[in-house]
Image 1 (cartoon, rainbow, N blue to C red):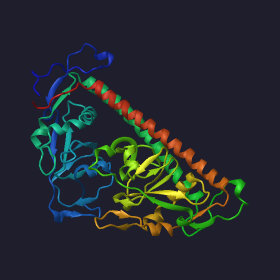
Image 2: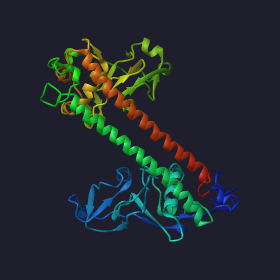
Image 3: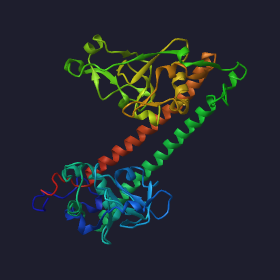
Image 4: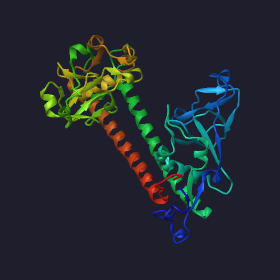
Amino acid sequence: MSKEGKKSLVPGRRFPEFQGKAAWELKPLKEMANVIMGSSPSSEAFNTDATGLPFMQGNADIKKGLSAPRLFTSQITKECDVGDILLSVRAPVGTVAKSVHHACIGRGLAAIRVLSSNNQEFLYQWLLSFESGWHKLSQGGTFDAVNSDDVKELPIDVPSEPAEQQKIAECFTSVDELITAQTQKLDVLKIHKKGLMQQLFPAEGETMPKRRFSEFHDVGKWIEMTLGEITKFQSGGTPSKDKPEYWDGNIPWISASSMHNTCINSSDQKITQLAVDKGGTIAPKGTILLLVRGSMLHKRIPVGISHIDVAFNQDVKALDLKIDIHEIFLLYLLASSERRLLRTVSKTGIGAGKLDTNDLKDFLVCAPAKKEEQQKIADCLTSIDELITAQTKKIDALKAHKKGLMQQLFPTIDEVNE
C-alpha cells in the first residue's frame, strides 16, 4: 500500500514518552533488512548423521522450534545465522521463528537480517503480528507461496525514532519471557503427572504398583482383568450428511478431532435431537470415550470422559461399565497403558490406525479390589490435571494479552500492496 493511500500510521497506543511524536513511516522490508530466499542443495548432499550444516526447510522445521534438525547437508546454498528471523514462504505461509542454528535454508524459508539502523526484535514481533496477513500475498496454485519480490516489498510500519522501536521490542520480549516461564511450569506439571502415573499404576508385566497410599498398604493385591470383563464397547455413527435437519443442532458430535483432552464437552460439529431419534448414539455424562480408528493412533491413544451428554461417530467407542469400577480411575488406567495399547494398533487400508475390538476385550489391566483405593488414585491425578488446566488457561490468557498488545502497539494495515 502506498503512503498516499494510508490514512494514518499512528498506533492505537503509544508509550508516554512518544505521545505526540511524528507518525510512523511505511517502508518496504528490503529497506529494513536483508532478505535471503532459501535454495535447496542437491539431493546427494543430504545426510542424517549430523555432519555438515543443519538443513532447515519450511513450516515443519519452524514448528519444531528449529532445535532438532531432521537433515544435514554438506553443500551450502543459502545460509542463515543464529538470531536471524526465519519466515515460511510456502504453505502455510507466514510462520515466523528465530533461528537457533547457523544453517542452510531450503526453498520453503527466507532468512531476514535487519540492517544496522533497525531493531531485530521489533521486526520479529511485527512479522509475528502480521502472520494472518500473508494470505493477501499468497499466490494460489498447487500450494500457497509468496515470491521474493512480495517478501522484499512487504510494507512495514516503523516508528520514526529508533528508541520507540526499542521500547516496543522490550515490551514484547518481557511478555514472551513470561509466557516461556509459565510454559516451563506447565511442562514440569506434565512431567510430574507422568511420574506419578508410573508410580501409582503397575509397570508392564507387573500386577502391583511401586507406590500405594499408606492406608492401602495391607489391603491386598490388585486384581488382573481384561477390558472385556470390565466394560462393553458401544459403537457410534454418522448421521446422513444429506439430511441437513440432522446437523447444526445443540448436541456435540465427537470425532477424532474432538479428542485432544481428557475432558470431553465440546465439538466442532453438532447434531440435532432428530438425528439421535433416528439412530444416533448418545454417551451420557461420565462415559469414557476411546478413539479406535484414526491417524492419531500411530502416535497416541486418545481417551477421555464426557462431561455432558454427547453423540459420537464410528471411529469412537463408548465404554459401558459392566462392573463397579470408578470411571475416573479407569480413565487414568487406560492412559497409563498407552504404550501397550499402541502396540496393538494395526493399519487400515488407507493407512489410518485401528484398535480392534477383540484385542481391546482381551487387553489385560490391573485394578485395586477396593473402590476406595481407586477413588484415592483418581482424586490424586485429577488434582494434578486441574493444576495443568489452570496453568494452560494462564498461558492462553498471556497469549491473548500479547495479541491485544500487538493490535494496539502496531498500526493496522488494512491493505497490502494495493
